[in-house]
Length: 381
Length: 217
Image (cartoon, rainbow over all chains, first blue to last red; front, side, top):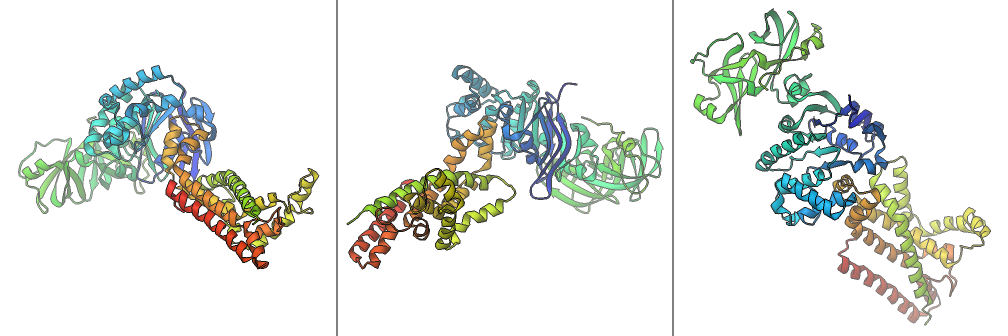
């Protein structure tokens, strides 16, 4: 296997006692997009500053292109990287001059620089803005300039620190696919730090979930979202229903798990007698009125209960159904209206056997975690 | 009227301000940017000259640079005598005023958004160039304000100067010492004139620069 572009080994960062970051090992392969997600204050930005050679870890080693580097003397290495922050941090000059800054500091001549600046202004769809003063730009435009300024140096490693967090929703939704196309088209090695799991899902090949300075899970994007290794990770990646059950039986490809007196059929494998934790994403649960009879199928769970909470929000309404345990579903505002959803209404919640995932073992049954976790089959991705 | 004390004080204060800026800016940057063992001790040591009695400071300085002190002997070996020269007055002014430069510049450096420095680094600027193109331009008002305060403090330095440079008319008698001398000799007209010059110099400098550069002290 080729050398990783960047490798961290036994990296720890502590500010006066407590470690804010503790990463035994992290490698970024050439051409991959790695998203580091986690709650606020989990050490994501610290990790990115260490990777970007802006901060020297308290202990540990950072290698770039196979060579050990010390952040205090890393100008040459840093010039092979580029970084974009949450704020665009543009200089008070024109758009084209801003985009050319990194090239000027690297000693690129005026003519080649001019050509590269023009090309990247085109690629980020900001060519008409080239002579505007940076301070007159909207937030979305300014962030496109900041991205162009980073990409124009054609870095070996691109570091993105919450680049969308400061943008309004329309700007973010316009920029996200443009950036995704550039990252994939150019196979740019990228580390993206974000607290927004949708950005990670849209851009990343692999996702690292950072919780309290430690990487709780590092895996392909689909696996992190559909096979979280712990409850904390599950909650962070958007699994809202997490319940404990006991495996009753295994029948063909289906495992029957009893949760609060209800029998659920799940696609994952489990040993009868084991206590397991189950996670169900709200978008995998659909709601129907109990009167209309959905076609019964062995691959679906139908649980009738009553609506306990109804939280309308855009774009989906969040519904908590009491089916013996609280089961969370999201439905569009239109379906909520069509079904006449209201608190106290009896309702049937439906989810596929493949939508319920095991989140590591729970309780005392001592099932092998590897065996349990290995059963994931990523549905409808 | 003998204006020697005025010129001497200006010369001493200007030299001392240049030296305190030269030494104070790196120390301020260190305190604002780095966490290191002994940082608290250094911070306390910086403020010490502001709170210790000037005569005590002067006394200890004299022990160090006097002809039996360690620095005094080393300098004597090089043929240089520092105690009771105008150089000693510069040293006294530096010691009395450097805290003002360091504290003011430190506050200025701390108020610079670290992200701007990091953005400059990620664009490929060297540390040296980040300091000159980002940090200092954003903090220069505070640094300059510290320099102005230090200059005024140096101009008025009395106690330390008296201990280490003496009060030798025509050699080390600075403006504040001269005023004291004239009052002791009941030459009130000269004392008044010198005092007015001192007040005018400080007022013009403080208000003039604060108008010009919009400084905040």
